[in-house]
Image (cartoon, rainbow, N blue to C red; front, side):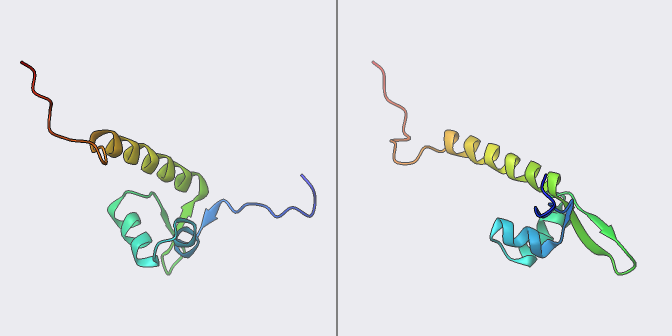
Length: 85
């Protein structure tokens, strides 16, 4: 690694996460509070931080859930079963 390459931070703020996911800070907070996205509270004022690896796990899980949804809810296909005689 070059001296000039910035290090990727281990922990992200909720604002960082919101920007990465292109959602609001309130939506990010809701993901954390619901337990969908793992985070920790640090410091006396309870600042929330999300580990970069946890964000990546959340994104991977969202891809899997989306693929499952798409496979069970096909778009543009006749969803009525064909009749067999």
